[in-house]
Length: 370
Image (cartoon, rainbow, N blue to C red; front, side):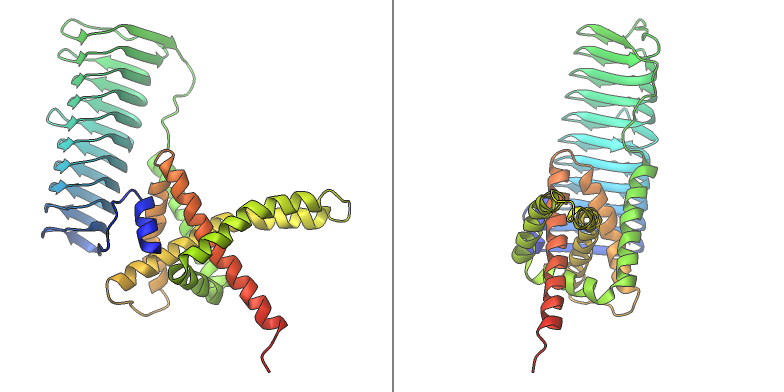
C-alpha cells in the first residue's frame, strides 16, 4: 500500500492509520494511538502520543510523551516532554528541557539544551548560538558562531565554532575536538576526561542547513507543485490518483524511467544526428525529477484527506493539502541516508505516475475508439 510505504519512509512505525490535525490553533489534548500529522499557527501536544509525530507550525510545544520519533518544524519549537526515540527539528529557536531517549538532530539559529534537558543518545546541533547546559549521554557534535558548554557530555565533544566557551561545572568525559580561529581555554571547575585537540580553522564555519534554506526548499517544492497544477491540472490530478491507487505500478515505471532515460540519452548522443534528441531527453529527465517529487506530494496529500473520511471541495483545496506535505517531504530529506532513500522512492512513485499518464494519453490520441 502506498500509505504504508510512504509512512515507513518518513520514519514512522508501520501503522494502519494516522491522525491529521490542522487549523489556526491545534491542541492535541486527548491520547493519540497512531502516527500524528499536525500543522497550524500554534501546535500544542500535552497528550500522550503512541506513535511518531510530524508537526509544522509557528509555535510548536511538545509537553506530553511520544513513543516514536518527533519531526518538528517551526519558528519556536519547545520540547519539554519525553520522546522515546529520536528528535529532528528545524526551527527559528529550539529549546529542549525534556528527555529524549534517542538522538537529537537540530538546525536552528538558536539551540538551547537546558539544564533539565537530557539526550540519551547523540546530539548534533547547528546554529548561530548553541548552548549545552543539560546532559548528553553520547557524543555531541556542535557547530555555530558561538558555542557555550556548561553541562555534561559523556562521550566526545566535537565543535566547529568561531567561539567555544567552557563554563565552570562543565563535564566532558571523553575528548574535546575543536576547530576554530583560536584555541579553547579550560578554566578551573571544568572536568575533561580525555584530551583537548585543537585545529586552527579561520574559514567560514559550515552550520549545515539553516531554517531559511530548509524553508526555501519547501517553498520551491510548493511553487513547483503550484505551477504544475496551474499548467497541467488534469495530468497532475490523474497522476496523483494513479499513484494513490496503483503505487506498485507507479514505482516500477518510475524506476525504469530513472534507469533507462540517462542510458538512452547517452546512446542517442553517440551519433551526430541524435545529439539534439539526447540533450532534449536529458533536459526533460532533469526537470521530471523534482516534478515527480511534487506529484508524490499531491498523491500523499490526497490519501491523507481521504483517510480522514472527507475531501473538501474547491480549487484551492489541493494546494492547501499539498502545502503541509511539501514541508514534510523537505524534513524527511534532512535525515541522513534514510531521507535520501525516502525521497528517491517518492520521486520514483511520482515520476512513474506521470510517465504512465503521458503514455496513456498518447495511446488514446493515437488509437481513438470507434
